Structures are given as C-alpha cells and as structure tokens.
Image 1: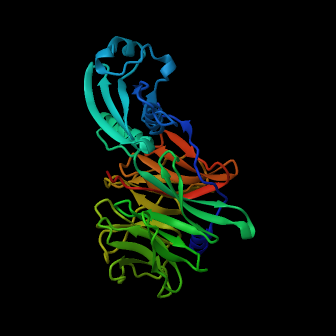
Image 2 (image 1 turned 45 degrees about the horizontal axis):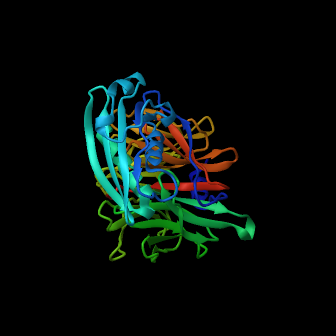
Image 3 (image 1 turned 120 degrees about the vertical axis):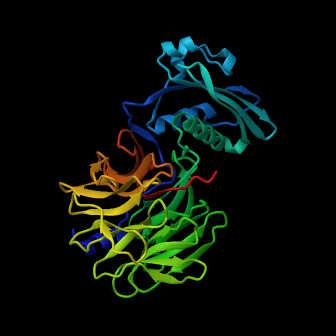
Length: 427
C-alpha cells in the first residue's frame, strides 16, 4: 500500500456502531495465578446491579494474569480472616484468597477487605474503602486495583477509562460517536456525536481532556474537549492535514501532524500560545507521533525509506533513527511506559497484526492472532494493549496482555467500534 493511500485511509476510515460495549474472554494465559474472590458479606440494603465481588472477579479474570474460582466450587464462604481455613484453599489449588464485607450507611457503601497468601498463610493486604451508592462499580474497580498491585507489584488499571469511536447507520443517517467507558466497557457515555468522522482520540495526562480529529466542518481539524464541562476548543485548523494529536507529559502541548507547508510533518503546539514548532523536515510523509516514556524523544511513522516504517527522534531536531525492519509496512507506534518496547501495526502475508520491538535487542515479535488489526493503545501500567480488529464482519476492540498470552474482546452490542485510547491512572 502506498503511504499516501494509507494516510488517506487512516483519515477517512469508518464503520457501524452502538453505545455500551460487551465483554468476551477469548483466551487465558497458561501461567494465570489462581485466586479466589469470595462473595462479600453484606449488611444493609445494597444498591441493585452487579455485586462488588463479582466485578472484582471479572476485573482480575479480564487482566489475563489471574484464574478465578467460581463461588459454587468453594468449600466455604468466609468474610473475615479469622474464618479462612488455608488447608481448604490449598486443596482447591488456590494461591490467593480475597474476603470482605460491605456495609451500607445512609448513601454510602463501606467495604472492608483482606487478601491472603494461601501458601504462606499470611495476610498481605487489609484495607477499607467507601463510595456513594451510585458508585459501587468505582468502589469495586478500586479494590481490584489494590489486589492487582499487592500481588504483582504493578499498579492496576481497572479504574482507568477507555475512549473509542462508534459508527451507526448508513448514508445520510450515519452517526459517529466519541464515547468514554470503564475498561470493561460498562458505564459508556457519549461525549460527541457527529455526521462526520471522528478519529484519533488522545487522553490528557490528568484524564480530564481528550484531543481528537473531527471532520465536522468538512475538513480535518484538531479539537481539545474538556470532559467535565463539555467545552471544546478547536486548536488546529490549518490548510491541509491536521491529524494525530498526542499530549506531552505536562499537558501543556500537543504533538500533531500538519501539512500546512505542503508536506506532512510533525509539529509541537504550545496550547497556551498556540505557537507551533516544526520537529521534522523531510520530503517524505512524517505522521503519527508519540512521545517516548521519558517524554524526551519522539516515535513516528515515515515513508522516507520507501514504505511506512517506525522512526525514533532522540530529541526534537535530531536525526531520526529507523526502528522497524521486519516488514515493508509498520505504522502507528505506541511505546510502553518503561522504555522497553514499542508497539505498532505490522503487515505480514497480507495480514495486519500488532507487533512489538524490544528496544534493547531490536527483536520483533507479533503479539496478536487476529489479522485486520489497527490503532494499538498501551495501558498505563504497560501490561495490556487494546486495539481494533475485524471479527465476524464487524470491527471490535480487543485487549491482549503485552506478551500476547491472554485476550478478551469488547464488541459493540450492534455495529462497529474502533479508534481506542486507554486513559491514564489518575488516582
């Protein structure tokens, strides 16, 4: 595919949509850690909907790193540490067990929970947390984050958000919707609806704003959207291409692709002054910028070697270094949070996968088993990756562990969903 055609496809592609996402676990990791989430005891009238312990169990399973035990297979249902008989849990092959109790007081739900290492017969976490009766899912995701961190040493991402675009209808009835949901697809909320394409949502570091490309005026322009107020600012509406926004770590500037001078180049815009600085200057098309983990260097896609490949610029103005070599098509770079890997769309045998390159060794590996993959986004702890792919004639979101060992999909209830962006940890 010529890069000009590829760039046009990135700017104009669209599908068909719906609001809330579903969740389907498609593959678990062989090395998943066995953990039991015992149904929490309850005191007082609990709000309707999913139980806190059920949400926690779903979160841990969804990560691909844990294998949870169904309550029907448990030999007992303790709610506090003194009632945990470790021998029973060892018989069931469990490594960890979580117990807890919920108490309602007025319009608040209070949780007390404890996590035990079964082999060591030791409590490794004991905490309390509370939330309003309308925020039980928030409480459950918080508990999941704490359990995940206690076991793995890495922060959990269950309290973070996803942004994505859905498309519904046909012809004059086609509607594009920018939506935000929990990481399990629940509590989806439409943030923008348009008859024209919406592309490339990108989260601000504080999780309060989204930058994206909208064609609502008939040409691509970059907007910054404050989620709490709904206020939108058009920050880039130059002649030609305005695309691929990416936030700086301090939230004060955006990387973007502009063709204002006739060729697609990488620019940096200071959002306060709207001053732009050109960072690349080459006859080739340079696009899809992303800061590295240290917010000093920039990854981007360029066809300066004859086809789209990933390049790294150690600092603005430095000579770019080519990163990818294993295919004639590698695009849309997304580095992890530790400087270990960069992920991207990789073509092999006419199929498009998500691949990653080890930045120390240069080794490349394909991590997805699907074949029409696009738009990778790395979770803020670097352990998961979300991307869009074709499935049964529709576009769905799929989440995989960073090594490709586990996966779950998030299809829309009806239609297509794409352009995912994983939000930051903000707690």
